[in-house]
Length: 413
Image 1 (cartoon, helix red, strand yellow):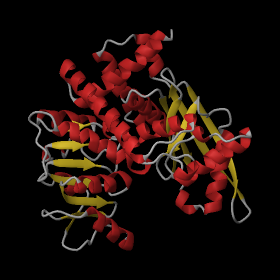
Image 2: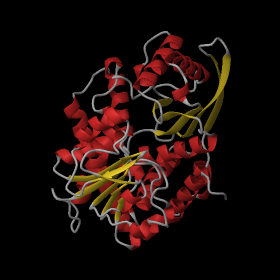
Image 3: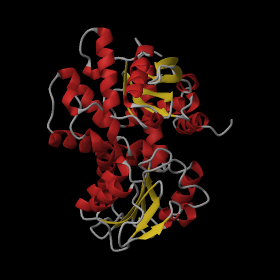
């Protein structure tokens, strides 16, 4: 089987299935999404010409509830990637023990080349193509790469217009003013830190106010992680963005770095720091390493050079399967993406619940509920790892796949 995102996702499923002696019939079903929709979206451009874009929505499994997953606008979006991400969402929702299955969507487009009006027309056209395919009790989209709360607002509005009444629960990640949840914008980072707190509570794993933190990526997850950890007293010594990284062993103030990036378009050049590249940042001496940028960053080639004691994998697929094995042999604890970055979908679930009951929580309650879910998921994953004598990633998949399989059996599938 070639090395594609979907082939890799299937291989990960097969490993977990082997560990739990999964029924072959259930495995065969789980290897394939239950529904795939491809849509053509004609958009009238600002120059009066019509351009047709291609979009997808994949629903992987709905045994535990309606499907859930983001929509990405990217020039390299393809069906194989969307299928893999939909499967990953099934496991992520199951691991968090929230009543969703997995889905994902994408449009092949470079949104940076579209005007505001063209982007709105594209989004509304996509929703029209998904008519009957999404809904608060069927499939609930959310933001992903190059999509944002404004795009989610258009999705909600177009869906409501087509149905003739307001349906805020049809999408999450909306602006707070129209039914979004407080705390959603930094939920991915906060959820990861909640898990890190649990790891640091383990016997033999030392984290304190002198712990050095390195963060690759200074987007939403990376920048909020840096600020949260800095506020907790950790020493953030290095951060990076697409143009490179900065390093100061005495520590950085992430809020000041953020201001600098807004003014200069990059963190590179921040006063009092040494410039490094995104490969070097991974190999810096530190206690906690947080890859929060791209996939496939820690591989077999550089896993032996990692000096961190703990890796919090906030980016999807930042650690390759081969690197998993090397890190485990070196006793470097890595918290897998399926667990580390699940704070986003967890607070998306909270948003959906609030939409359905038309009763909204304050930010403190959202964060308390998030911490409870994230830390319970970590403890259950850790216990599964101890039981099966395996690493946390395999334990997370074993736990997630077991729950979906049990739901399928109970429903008679």
